[in-house]
Length: 151
Image (cartoon, rainbow, N blue to C red; front, side, top):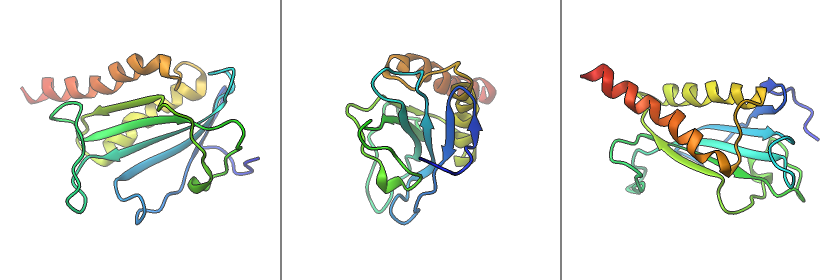
């Protein structure tokens, strides 16, 4: 049982998860979500954002050439209740959502996702794999916005 107050509390409860920049150098945002309404078999999910800049010579695999960030959601094994320690998470496979997108900065990438997390907390948007298309449209709308504004 997580005793800390969630960052967002509604139909879903969402916590910002602390992470170690030394062990996760590309991570710029990390959330734990409790949403029993999303799926019958599991109610916990983890969402994260990473930047796609090279780290120590490692290169990302890109879904499209201009991508700057990647949003990912993974369900947590219902037999292992999570804590806010990211090392406690036991993930289910496959990954629920993995969508790259374009953001002007790390802060803008986090802001883009946190706006949608407000919709998750209200029950208006799901993190289930059936919603991959919705997340793709929402996150890629930032790409279209930038292209329109730079023309």
